[in-house]
Length: 201
Length: 201
Image (tube, rainbow over all chains, first blue to last red; front, side, top):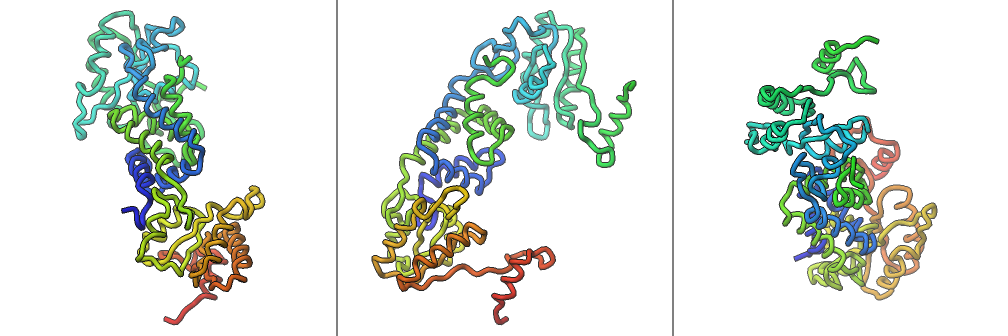
């Protein structure tokens, strides 16, 4: 019965949208009614893009990033430095680092972080693939670029211990005050790290 | 070239999502990578729901609400009071009113508000359909339930003037303080309306 509520096709899309992260019932309703107002072609294009997303992407067998080709364009580019690997949690982190335009090495995507509380162990991440990659040789430095929070730090510490015997230089991103920050509102840990990591002016 | 950016199928969905209201590049990226992590069936279900939305909905020829059937279940229900019509701006407004469970009349969806600045005149709204409906007879009261803002008020005033000669009772929703409000922070207009509309305790 649609009486009193939205018509079934409308309720169905709202339910599907609500399953997405950060989309509550009100946002789902707003998006649904937006699509209802737009030309059919626009909704069709969105639906096709969703289907293509799953059908046309694979994991790069080297860096584990999502890509249309294997190996991915980054791994097969002659312009990138194969001796440098930046280990990140998620594919989105690569987009952020690439936007800086300053990193010329390769990547390795873990697809998560260690999280014992959520039952995520090393076998659930692309850790073994990283070890194999380093054993293959040719890598002189690994940047452990997990997020600066408890789980990211735990994962970095674990990888540090695991990779140390392989004789590769292990580094991590600098910690300190972000651009635009206000000392007055900075948290203690950030401020401490900013002090400890201070550099010559 | 996908070098440096996301793979084409990923970039394509992010672009399509960014066209939706309230979805910026970061939300689009988050949603896209969420879908990449979920089973293919889930993405497929979302895509199909989007296509079905456009293919299976029509405007009810009576109340102009979006529905799978024409007339819609509300208009064809014997339990609703056909002598009472609540005029709303958008289909979403009907969902909100139905959630109260207190309204037993029918609806009429304008599909917008008068907005000279945006080039929206009476001919762009379902105004003529409303007039025809009232001329058909049997309606004793029309509740003008447009939103309490400048454009909604303008539209209600326009409809009031237009419908007055038809001899139907014209009402509007009460104005006053919303539940949970704080007198200290209420705006002048709301407070004035709350005073003017005060009722016996």
